[in-house]
Image (cartoon, rainbow, N blue to C red; front, side, top):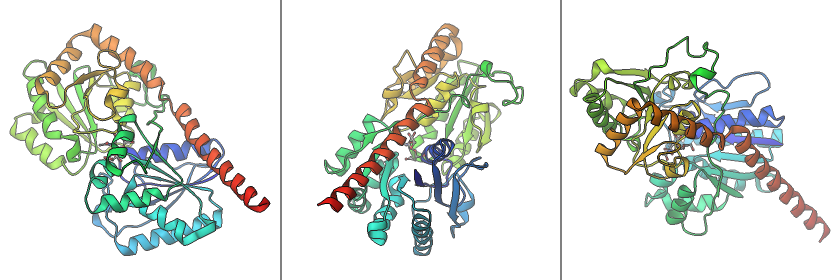
Length: 392
Ligand code: GMT
């Protein structure tokens, strides 16, 4: 198959899903072109892999992969659209798959009108705040809904998010659930790794990890509050992995809480796996998560997850089995769970085992099979329609 994938270049989950999908599909022998504004964050190069096409954005922040750019200038839009349309025609791309609704659903709809009969099949994946924030916006939401109607197929990452899509856009927009996935050869427990990927690091059992793109939806202020209370009970440290708009504020909170000596700032990492496997627990404080790729990756790394029961998290985590959930806003509950998981080896071992077996349900090869079947059935349907048109 000839596939085009459009995504943001930031460090966020939607980019990760898009690029892991692109890499795996090209490994399977498909020709994959990736389109973005700025070179996507991470190590995605390699012979025989996807072919990258990007335009350079005008914004200074383009060089900062922590930012998710949803507002593009007219000039950027035009050069992106020209690049995509020319490549689709020249390379005979059959399926164009966009990740994250804004602005890509608009572009995909425009691509269809520009190319008419030569347009590829359009697939869109809605990831999170594209629905929760942009979809719910009174101005953008209705326009986004109309653009989504032009897609040939929509997917999203959890039942919960599918429900939210229905609530926000109405019954005319329906998405198939294809969850996030994890490469279990890359994300694996420390003991099972060869030791070189973590630089020979020793498991730091009392390290509490937080991995995110530090947007307000991740609620990093709550993270610091929880850590302050945990530290009063257990000798522990907090590892902040990632970067984003709320990072400066988070650092000020760390300082004013007198926690600077106990918080390690790792910044952006293109190999989170080697860090995460050395920690004792992953703490999530998000207001919302459509799925939470960071939680899945921690589970595959043999790290227990403590997270709020919001969005798609209860689908991934059965509390007490594959992780531990607290009620949204229940700070004391979160503190208690972190304390238990850091001090009760039996509980932590049980959660690690449960997390590993749950993560195996979201293995990369298994989930990429679902995307591959979706593409091939859409292509087969289109060919069937063409045959029928010729016959009739
Ligand atoms: O929608 C976002 O906030 C951005 C997006 C990203 O690019 O970081 O994250 C979402 O997509 C991930 C991949 O599908 C999911 O695992 C995250 O849960 C989701 N984030 C939110 O829903 C806040």
